Image (cartoon, rainbow, N blue to C red; front, side):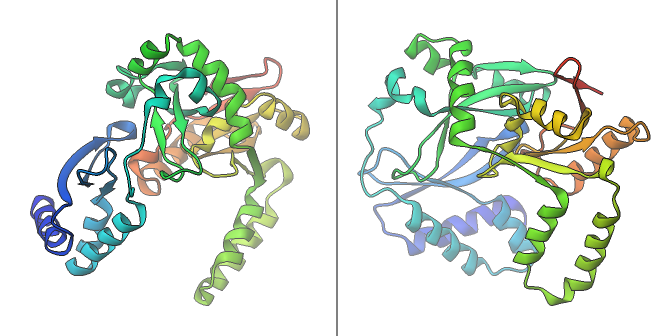
Length: 309
């Protein structure tokens, strides 16, 4: 079954099971790195905002054997859990004073997002771009976000520099930094794992981590929510303090838009080999829309700055 036929079968399944006053429409949404995702919009006359449920992953699950009826039920369950019971007044978004405290930033790839950046205020940063979003917390949206666009700046009569100043103050407070050793991360993963068959493999991994010399230890930098955590490299003093703690500079390997890996500098490490490793991980382990960059960066203690390798 091809994707389009799958979409139509799912749509028919949804229509047959949902109330007749709910309209179901197929939509395409451009996400990070130009990835085009398809999903269903559920709307009623009583709601001015409708949730979009993306179905690309459901198609992969279908190809792996999940029954179509189960997929339809799961999509309906997601809708029922997240639907709004009434319209939401969004007039607050017209006032900069009402939104400024929840303006945050994140990092995306500059080259892969050219089309998105045409209508999005951004600040180039090396080969990346700093973009801004509004975080809706503890409301009917859960922790949904609104990407800030040029049209919003025109309404607010603000500049991208104003956004950066707000986000630089807000983001570290709203999404506090989290820095852990890779061995700690692995221990946490093991503690969460209930698959006894993997115990031998896990033991081997731990032994390999223990054998790493201190100057080869890796650290994972993110934020406490582990969402858009790569932007923690922009937080004031985070990289400077880490460099002082280890007594040297370090490489920054972009694991995803959600986190980066810090690797203390060692002359034996070849930047080109590190770059090949990052590229391979991005191609095989990271969802396309979550890839940050294929580049490797170096933090210089003398200049207190990030350089591209």
